[in-house]
Image (cartoon, rainbow, N blue to C red; front, side, top):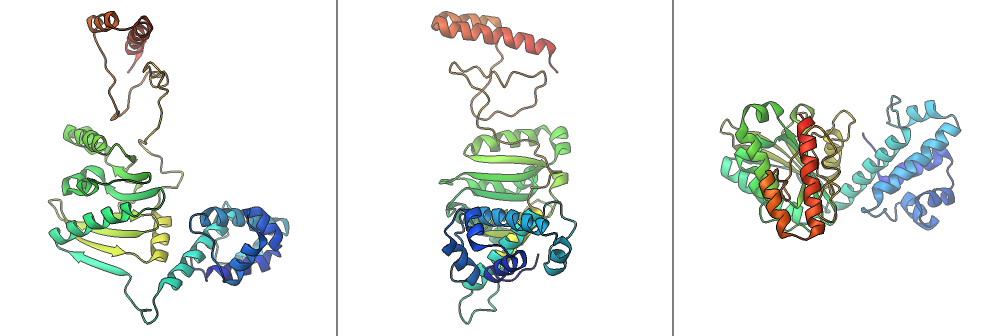
Length: 340
């Protein structure tokens, strides 16, 4: 999506829809003076809230366009596909692209307009050291929750030593890693299953979300949202042998939009949940409300114990705890007798 700077793009949308500044200000919850400054280029929205602001303005502009029956003229005037199902969303994305363009223009130092925004690193040792340093510094410098897209296969990357690059991180904000998983490999190689367990257990403070490797476009990309993109190549070992590092903010944003996992067809195989209905006495009611078991647990353990062990525990705890343990024992028996 090609766009002009933020101010000119916003001004064109306001002019086209005949939107009132005061109405637009009310929609985004800002004083009208802010909207005036955004449209004349003297100020930009805060990067922390710009996505929300653009989304809300996009929906408002779309409502005006529909109300005025100017859809056909809009698609001829603006570089947005007429096949879209959500015009408001597309206008919001158009404003976001314009915002990134302005940021990029503002950050180019005088006399450095032709400074390269791409760096290439080759060689196993140099590439590995570069990636480790880049990920550590990039994640540690996050000022809010971060999202890392890894368009590659989890276990293959494990063999390269990739996941060791995350060791020692002191996370100040939540980090979500979205990565591909080859289910055929997991099924045929039990060691790969152990690899997944151990890695999840080593990084309990990171939220891993797994997708079928078939849905990850297999583009060999590592994308830290809003920060950088790395495209890598592996040899047959497998080891990293080359990577291309992209840090132009506009390019990073466009690549993220094209390769993110936001499509409805890309449903997670597994994702982190914060609660499984844990009661005060440690009984997970929601967890056991099923007849099929397909799960990973890396925080704590769930034990399936023989009667003798239950009886022994019940004799050494309070009556209230003993009742909960007996209830758990009976529930397990009922579920396991009927489960797959």
